[in-house]
Length: 279
Image (cartoon, rainbow, N blue to C red; front, side, top):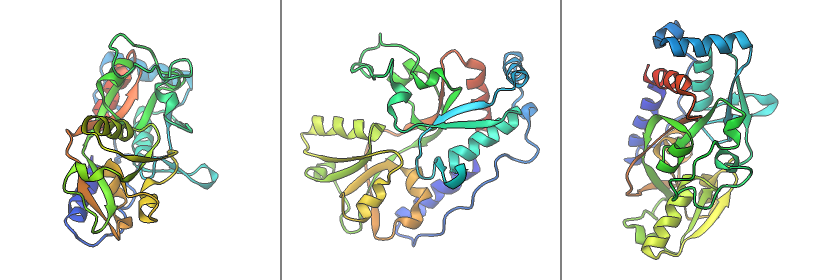
């Protein structure tokens, strides 16, 4: 997808010490002339779309407010990469896009109101997450992890490598230098689990500054209320114009893939999303 390629290219420039540039202009909701036929739907996919069109129901997604990915301003005005992609996808299907904004990540993975404590480690724990029972799909940078693939289908959109952002002059050359540092993270995000696991394995003493999804960990670092934040390269590419006085340090882990999620039973929808991403 062109917006993603532009943003990743911008990250490479920013990480090499180039001066920050203005944000990338918003992309159109859908490529002109793109239609359902462009996805070459199978009979099952065409039936799924036709049934939904006849029902008059909107295509319903759930999201959290994440700067650059999905934001909702005054009067309900929506913006962000995932909103643009979702709106374009719904347009291709001939459906109205609607989004439920969730206050936290918990409902995306909970079962009867709680996240089972062994969901990440016990392969026999399988269920439909609470929020996914009421929407068609989750939009946003959801990481494709083995335990999540047990609960839902994640259609990858782009690969993601995490980086640590801190103040210029305080770059890290080894992960051991994180010990004793304050790390600002969105509560419940995969980066929290990643760092807690690292701290446990390497014996690091980390101080977590956890915030709600609509709060900005990068701002906490810029204001000196945290030393670093950990996030994907796309996030920092989108907000490279705010990186004055900040710099990135490598976080050597295997890249992961992130994308949208839907019920395991929604195979036609998952296939259509995959085709749309591939256009």
